[in-house]
Length: 338
Image 1: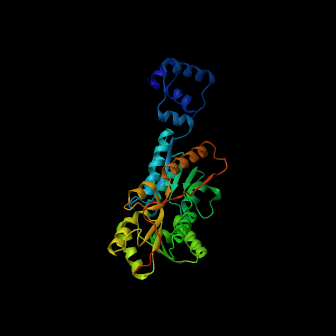
Image 2: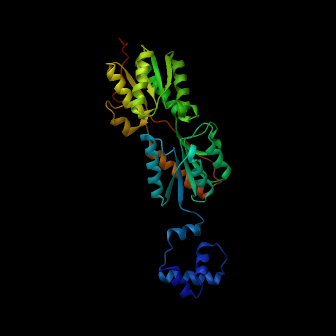
């Protein structure tokens, strides 16, 4: 059954039926009642587009991801999958849109094109032009991550500062005195990537509190970069016995460099970090890490966004996640390097 049949039986035009369903133009109460009676008799159910028009919504949310040319980490893929799954459970579609560099036009189309009811924004920087643009536009949005001053937005985030500090304290409790923080890639950190800067702050604070020797380095987000990074660290820091890291994509390469140097994990060298749980468990040996609940965080971001779409005036909500460190196979008592 279609709108044409409804119009015929109600004795009105197709456009009048459409206006009655969408509310785009006024229709008399008597005509609207006649149309609704026919709809009830026929058991007509408007399609998703018609329902969306009637509600004034697209029933689509945007998910703004890092540039498509950049390989997403396992944790980032977890966020994407969880947002898509949570949106599907809420009967929402998801429009994926990259941002940054040549992708800025894509982001602007999402903001201004009325293609989505709201946006989930990933990989947020301390000073983020995308956040400023969304605030200016009035389009509801929620961040997975937060800016330096995030009071004017809703967000869910990982407490990297606390978690890296916990990693340092755990290693210090095992007797490690010379530690390194292996961060994300230098370009990302230089651009103000929030997790990178907060990890540095947590590392510096814990190193000072425990009176340790610490060094910070950036590392490309892939195994070869992790291997090269650890090779340089081992050569330049002969007393180094442990690292803390938020760069899960580079960890397997770090393992390789340690193995090539004749160092066993955790017998000779310890590694701890922040990572997606199944990724940490899949490594050999499994990584001692604060397990990021990517599935839950993506679902919570969608939940917050749905609330903001329904009522943009509700107070902003913030969720800062600090999971405990899961002790696995990569941390042990300090042993001086030969």
